Image (tube, rainbow, N blue to C red; front, side, top):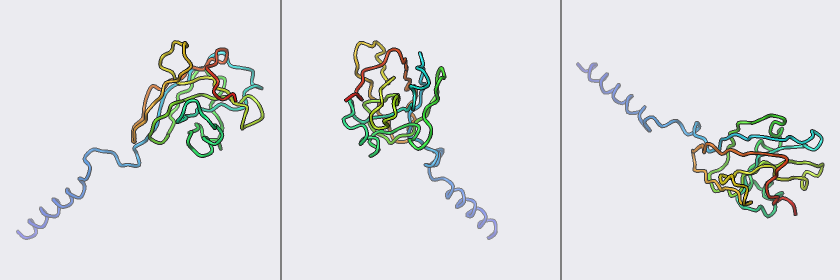
Length: 167
C-alpha cells in the first residue's frame, strides 16, 4: 500500500515537472526574422557587380550608411564577413535574422566599384505600392519571436529605384 501511494505521488510529481509552458517551443527555437523572395531582371555585366547585399535600415533615407552598418543600426544579409547574395539567378528565397524593431528601408544594394565605403547603389527596395510613382519604400515592423513572411523585393538593373546612397 505504501509502495503504491509512493508510486502515484512519484508519477504525479514527474508529470508536474514536465509541464511548464504547454506546447510552446523552447526559446532557442524561436526566431526573429523576415523571409521573402528577391526576383532579378536584366543582370549587369559580371565586372560591374562586386557585391550584392540585402540591408535593413532603421531610417529612410539613411544618413551615414557606413556608420549605420558598422554600428549594427543597419543589418546586412548575408553578414559582411561572408559572400554576398547569389548572382545571375532568376530569384532567391531568403530568411534574414534581425532584431525586433521598425525598419524604414529594406534594400538590395550593389557594390559596383572598388571603394567599399562609397561605391554602392540601391538596385531594389521593399515597396508594396508597386506603382513606381513614388520613391518611398514600405517600412516593416518585426516583433520578437516572429518571422515576417512575404517581404518580396524586385530588382531590375535597368530600372533602379531612387538612390539615397549617392552623396
